[in-house]
Image 1 (cartoon, helix red, strand yellow):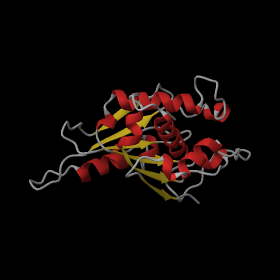
Image 2 (cartoon, one colour):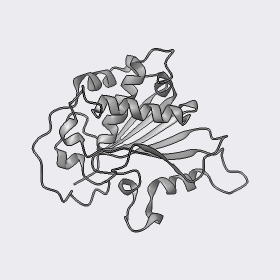
Image 3 (cartoon, helix red, strand yellow):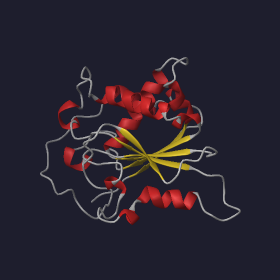
Length: 213
C-alpha cells in the first residue's frame, strides 16, 4: 500500500521528443508499482515496464518514443473520506492535487492515455470532470483537452463493495481481506457528467475491462 505523498514515477526514461504519455493509476489499497507487478518480489514482472520496452524498441525503424508513468497516491483513507467533499483529502481535492502534479510535470503537453485500476478509474474521471469544468484560462483545463484514452480495469462505475475496490489486478485471486458492507454509489455528478459525451473533450475514447473473480 502506498503511504507516501502523491508522486509521479517515471517508468524507463523520459523522452523529450515523446509523442504521448501513458499514465497508470492504481486503486484502493494499491501502489504505483505493486498494483501492476505480477510478483511483488520480482521487479521484472512490472507491467508498465513491459509496455515501455514494447513501445520504445531499439531497432532503427522503431516508432517515435512514448513516455510511461505511474501515479502513486495515498488510497487507504478513502474508506472514511470518499464522500467527504469538504475535507482536504477528499476525492475532489485529491483529484485536483493529482491534476496539478501531472500539469507541473508537463504530462498534458502531449497526448495522454490513462490505464486505471478500480478506484483509480473513478479518480481519473473526477480529474477529467474537474478539468472540463475549469476555465479555459486555467492550466488544469489542459488535462481534459490532452486526454485521448482512458482504459478502465475493474472500475466500479455504479458502485461496489470495498472488498472489490481493493482487489488485485490478477483476476484469478480474490481479495483476502474481510468483506466490507456495500459501498454507496459513486457521486452522481461525476457519473452523469462522464456519460454525457458533450462534456468530454473532442477525440476522447474510453474502454472498460472487467477482471476479477
